[in-house]
Length: 361
Ligand SMILES: C=C(CC[C@@H](C)[C@H]1CC[C@H]2C3=CC[C@H]4[C@H](C)[C@@H](O)CC[C@]4(C)[C@H]3CC[C@]12C)C(C)C
Ligand SMILES: C[S@@+](CC[C@H](N)C(=O)[O-])C[C@H]1O[C@@H](n2cnc3c(N)ncnc32)[C@H](O)[C@@H]1O
Image (cartoon, rainbow, N blue to C red; front, side, top):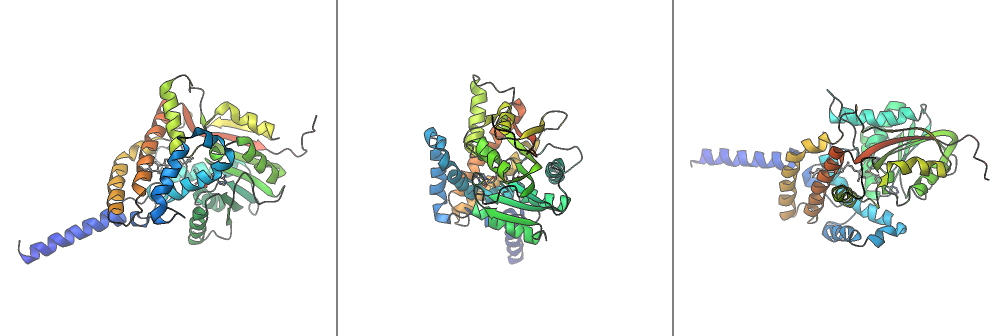
C-alpha cells in the first residue's frame, strides 16, 4: 500500500476506535463514557474481589436473612453498578411505562413528575427522596415542583455523583444529598412536607423498618408515595419457572427478597399510615416498561465487547466484565418477569401520615 493509503487506513481505524470507545453508548449526552467506568468507591484492584463477595451472599441465604448486613451488601452492589447504570441507562435508576411517541427520557421524567404531583407539595416545601441514587428523579422533581428536595443514599460514590450532577444542572440550591441508611435516617421527627421513594425500598430487608422511618420524619397530614418492586397476583410460588425468574431478579438487583403486592398496604397500615391510593402502574393500558430492556439487547452485546476490551488493556477494572455479565443476565430475568406479568417494578402506593396519631388500644 502506498504511504497515502496507509495514512488514510490508519486515520480511519483511529477514528473508528475513538468512536467505539469514547462516543458509542452513553445514554445521556453528558453521561458516563466507557473509558470512565470504575468500581465506585472501591479501588480498581478490589473490584473483582468485591464482586465475588457480593455473589457469595446468595450462596448463603442465611446471611441475607441477617438484616443488619443488608445495607453493606447493597452499598457494595451500588459501588459495582453505578457507573454501568449511568453509562448504559442514564441518571434515573428506575423503569417507567413506555409512552407512544415519547422518548425514554421523556417517559422517565413524566413518571417522576407523577410522583411529586401525587404528594401535592408546593414551591419551597421540604421533600424527602428515600434512596435517591445519583439524583435523576430528584432533579426532575425539583425543577417541576420548585420544592427543596433532600435525598438520602447508602452509597457515598452516588452522593458525589449526585452533587456533581446537581451543580451542573444548576439545581444545587434546591437539591441536597445526604449519605446514610434509610433505616435510621439522620433527620428530626415531623420535619418533611412530603416524601417519595422510587424503586428503592425493595432493598430494605423489612419494609416496616423503612416505612416507620419515613413516617417518623414526615409532618402530620403530609403524603408519601412509593413505587415498589413486587410479585403480582399472577405469581405462583409452586411454578419453578416463576421462582427462577424472581430469584434471578433478586440476585442481579441486590434484593433481600421480593414482596408480594398484597403485603405493601398491610405494612403501611401497621406503621400508622392511611392508604390513600394503590395502583400497579405497569398494568394495561400502560405500555410495557420492559420494551426498553428488550430493545437494548444489541447495545448490551456491543457494551460487553467494549468492557471486555477495556478491562483487558487495563482501562476498566478487571471485575467490570463480571458485573456487566451479571447485569446482562438480570436484564433477561426482568424482561421475563415483565412479559409473564408476574413482576412489577412500579406498584404505586400513596400514603398519608394522619393529622392525629391513631390512639393506642
Ligand atoms: C431499581 C433497580 C435498578 C433498575 C434498573 C435501572 C437496572 C436493572 C437492570 C439494569 C441493567 C441491565 C442491563 C445493562 C446492560 C447489560 C449494560 O450494557 C448497560 C446497562 C444495563 C442496561 C443496566 C442499566 C440499569 C438497569 C436497567 C434495582 C437495582 C432495585
Ligand atoms: C435502584 S436505585 C433508585 C435510585 C433513585 N430512586 C432513582 O430512581 O434513580 C436504589 C437506591 O436506593 C438506595 N438504598 C438502598 N438501600 C438503602 C439504604 N439502606 N439506605 C439508603 N439508601 C439505600 C441505593 O443506594 C440507591 O440509591
